Length: 101
Image (tube, rainbow, N blue to C red):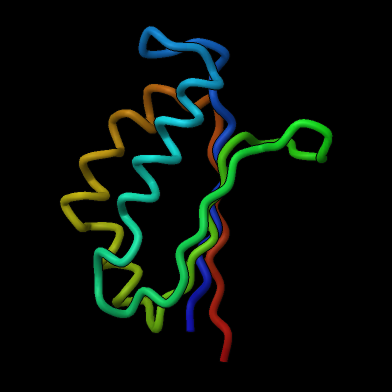
């Protein structure tokens, strides 16, 4: 099994909207990618919440049966379609993939 964790820090303003609006739009686009490929076991998104520690604004935690399943997700047209928005609104991105045997 492969775990794929990604976090994004968003710009204060981008694409004509403030950070809070873009956080919600980004999460909606991510959530629409849940279950788009076989082999996706788990797909969870979250937004930073007031009163809880968070150095990033949007988080994705997902699990895949294999590297091939993750590659299928990464290259899926629906996932590719959201990338321009993600690039436009993000200030920083962190990714951590690891295998669990």
